[in-house]
Image 1 (cartoon, rainbow, N blue to C red):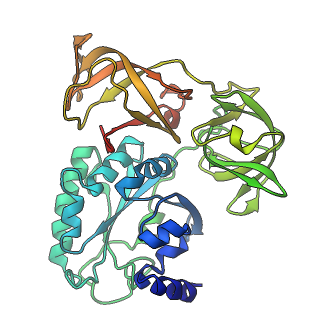
Image 2: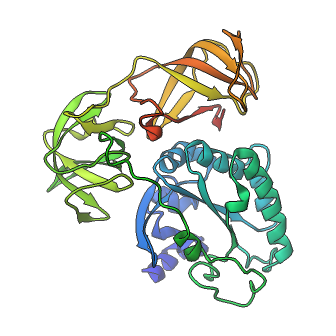
Image 3: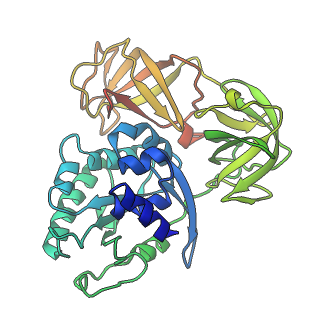
Length: 385
């Protein structure tokens, strides 16, 4: 299979992308040499069964990156160690900085950093280059909110396989830490809220000839079983679940953390969309909201934000413009203590309590009850605010 990919990639002048083509299946992805959409794969380590969510890193497809990140438990931050590439990612609007910030904002408190391309001619497996990258990145991750001392920084060469599963060569003999596989097995599995009512944010929907309409997404809370009557918010459409599939195998039930597809009866593909939320129609079903109160921290905005501001809100798999209808309070972003009631505006560095009104139907939930459906990212001008 890899040989076929290498041949096809060479014909496009991208022979070094042969491994990327395992997960980059779209014609546009292969022509451009970047991931565009999310792809999901699975593998097993000696200790755990993992699902890989390959999310695009390019800023043009940040919406898909956010969707993928919102469904993960752990972030693996991949760094290009070659001269100039790392520095570009760490500029003020660099993608490395943005990815780390998004991962923390979307609730991924565990992270592994892979410092890749150690075999590059500009790096040549240099320990000094590794330490330089580790020091600068550790400092930034600490500012974001991570405990950088607990994050493994693993120098790798994905091209030759160094430090992925085993230590393949002597070039990295100066590194005494874990390989990627060893670091994965040291992760702490999150608590799975099986006792909560069912919530599944829909990532995509397919029409499969012999099966019917199949929404796909990750179970965030509750348990899904065939026979359950699910309701899709915000539309209120109700449908019976016929079957559940995970990694191309049918399963009898799905638990929190499972990335699944589930077939439903008498529902057209055009009636279910990314951003919808499936829930049990008979047990605290999810609904659309007319408005919601939120705590917002402004990290990067060039001006003042007042009532009437309408950026994009990325909440679970939904991407909906929402209007700031009432900025109620300005807060100290570190302590949460109220500074001012009804401020005329907020700006970078401020935190606030604000009423938000979606411009089209949106399902959100209280953070205390359903954290993955109660946290969000604000985007404007193609960057995180």
